[in-house]
Amino acid sequence: MTEKQLSEKLADMYNNARRNEQATMIHLFGIKYAAEIRKYSIKDIVLAAGLHLSYLTEVHKGIMLSKYVAPLN
Image (cartoon, rainbow, N blue to C red):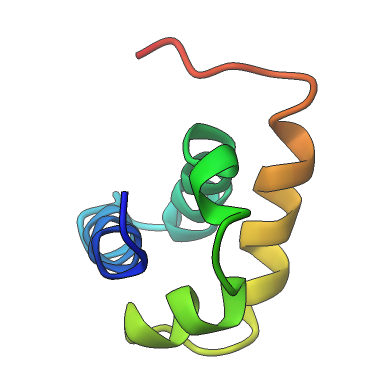
């Protein structure tokens, strides 16, 4: 997956999240795509997705969680 595709996926997951679940979707993004995200700059992905730089921390949390959890789908 390219950096552009990752940023589009992040933007989609964030923008289509239920109310009050945006941060959860960012964590899930980090969990699901951790291996792909590691190939690129998290900062660049977050900014390209049109999100505030503070969400960089949330993506990083998801990446760290990916060592311990796996999404059901």
